[in-house]
Image 1 (cartoon, rainbow, N blue to C red):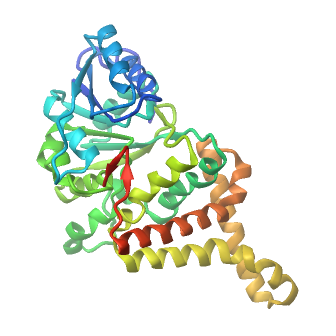
Image 2: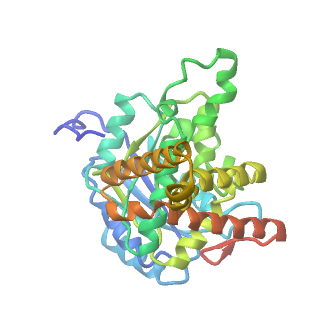
Image 3: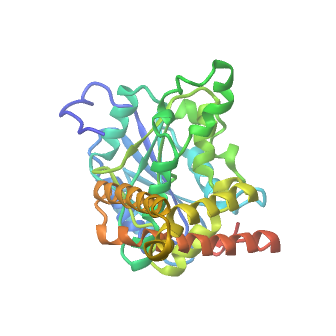
Length: 360
């Protein structure tokens, strides 16, 4: 997204409500809220829902609300109904209090650059879209963060034809478009912006109240309803530190890994095998092929390795990640395969994943 020209919003600036759900976010909530307060946009308000936090989040929010009462309103969350998942319930409550023309939902572990809201509002107008999602710059600290998290972006950009998120595929027959278009939908719940009329028309978060991967389901609902959406690189707009420990990383992905495949075991296992064949097998087999393999198999393995690392290094440069960790791409794939086995075990044993001290 391009910078906003000076005085661009002098004559007209739609009201924006920035909505932040927070449950046990004492380590990150102050940075998140302060970055929202510092937005260089003339017409916005911030709503935070304290979702029964027990770790000091409430005290931090009370202090911030006292300092910035004109810009910030904090609500105490109501107890979660049994038929809702926590994040959707929190976002739904925020939407009930929001009065902006545009609703921006961000996670408490994200932070905004001062021009983020201006860029988003301008882009929604210039590109004529009803829903925008940004893919934040992921700040990576630990070894496993740097090894694992880039694979999410890698999968998105290599498996999803992103141009069809915004425009219909010209090759798709008209009678299939309504059914197939939602398949080209993706979103990142760390930053989502809706025109309020579109959000209300699709039923808001109530329409995804039992969906673990609620962001993608909201994007699908947008496309099903005939609204326009697009997704953008969050460079110079939004950043995020998703997890700060190996345990958080594992549990965070554990809760939504299988759900991201619609809990379809055939698809889940098939994609796992495909990743092993594509990213791990060429590396493992290379020494044996050099010694005993045929020239054709060696060429095939080398081509797969060059393609994998070529794509990965482009991605690392784009998101400014350390390129040396790109060499560990197969290790990250192996990490996800082991997690996949654990997730399948949870599914067949009926074990519910937990997040923020709640069963999902």
